[in-house]
Length: 85
Image (cartoon, rainbow, N blue to C red; front, side, top):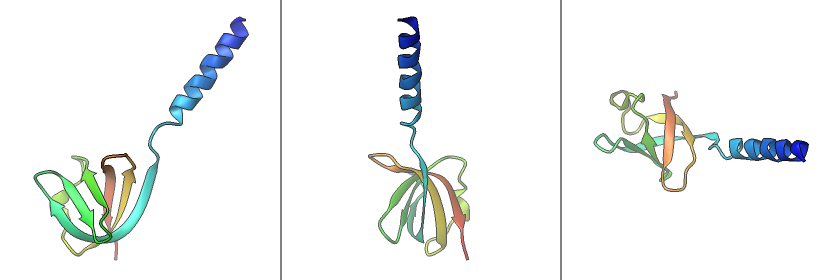
C-alpha cells in the first residue's frame, strides 16, 4: 500500500511539473511599444507583456526582433526580445 501511495505521489509531481509554460519563440517587426504598460505588439498582431529586465528603451518601432516568450491565456509574457538583422 505504501509503495502504491509513493508511486501515485511521484506521478502527480511529474504531471504538475509538465504544466509549466514552455518557452516559445516568434519573429516579426515591432508595430508598437507601450512603455507605460510594458507591452510590445508585433506586425502580425501578437502582443506581449515585457518583463522588467527587458530594456524597452533599446527597442524601436519597425525593428525586426526575435521574442522568446511564455504562452499564457490572457497575454504572452516576453522573456527576451532580441533585435535581428
